[in-house]
Length: 275
Image (tube, rainbow, N blue to C red; front, side, top):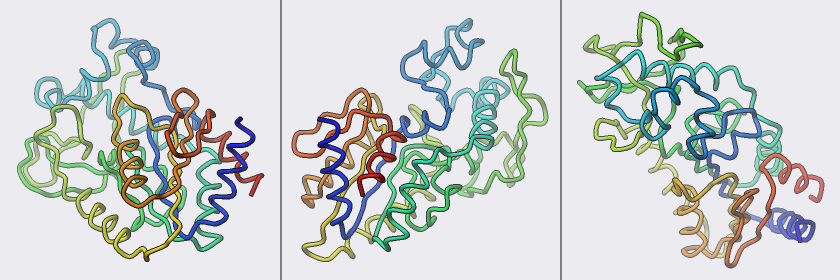
């Protein structure tokens, strides 16, 4: 079944006029990034938080930047450093070759905050990071609507306690504690303007597709726990009739599309070989 699905996916991509790339957290696991699925998966990556009884959902809450900023920046600072040090896996370059070398019209819709599509050379004008990006900061209050790059920010984290050391990142306007421009759980202080600008470009991209364009959606590592990417790819499948290729080692089922029960990197390598 997988071999047949790979061939069907390769044929759909060969014939595509435009490609919508959808990527969830599973896309980064092949690069060596932690799998936060379930509390045990998270605690394997961050043992001190197990002792505190804090899950990923507990820590991904903006309240910590006010209640315990060293803990908040211990978690997000470690992730920032990890994402910077991690090389995106070969699947990213395969995707880039599929869309750029063959001059296909494309857009990337991702819930990942690691910025790996940008570091892999995808056009920044063709990416929407629907949950924001760890490579950009904002005021934790917020005191203003300014979002700025975190390129010059260095966060030192104690690997035993996962607490950040002083000095912590501060707002460039008011001098208070800064935070990543990432949409967290129950987040009323996230500044959406950067992502809204990306969303406008994404909507314009859809508007520019001509009637009859053969659109293919390639969804990778997008689960159902936080289903933002999966919902968007399903929505486009219903709205535009695009051919959906769903790649997921655990939950690849799709009613009308092509299901590939593999991890992203392996599936993309097989599709590239078939093409």
